[in-house]
Length: 236
Image (tube, rainbow, N blue to C red; front, side, top):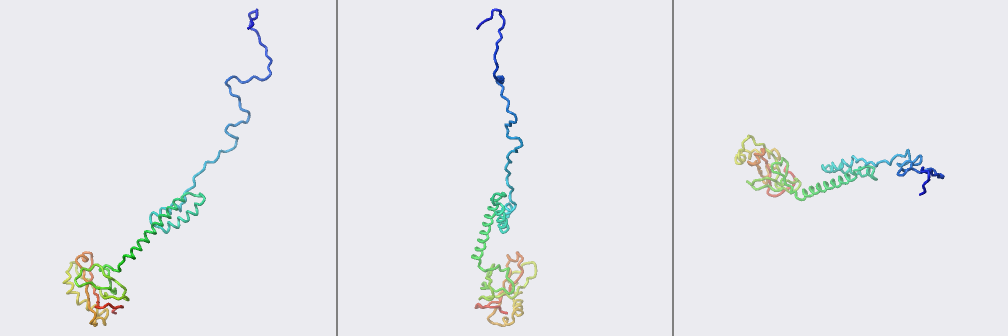
């Protein structure tokens, strides 16, 4: 380094060829119009919205669970058409409603089939009425709960020709009912079918309430005309 003899500070001279740069550590200013967040006036992309759930799809699922399968199937088909292409949600609900409805149909079909297969054509003895025909009459003194009811056009042994109401609130016993209602049944046969009353091949069979059925409010004596050989048609 050169020192000046006068001891003063020397002056440096420099020719400037370009404007001075920014101070150290200072970031340059952005150019005019620059927007780091995109162009001015351009809206952001819309946020995707979830499609609404189809009302028919909801109804199909609920009705299917409740077993109202006919309406469930109808609403399910409508919902499938309305939810095509994702226009509405709930397509899965509609499909579930149809599946559940199909299960209900299978259950009811199985019940009907079982009822047909296992039905024996009998009725409760307390449910017979005048004009019913019985395929086979029970043995005398038997405890009867059901009777094989058939059409009178089919071969049968007995035909109910009268139902006589038993009076009183206390069970009188079958022996007492036999004594009291035997003659009343014979008189009723003469009124129901006069020719049958005079036919020696036709006799009367009485079906009385038991103590058990009496307690269940059974109060009728059934008068049944019977033949030894099965016949077709009514005795009238």
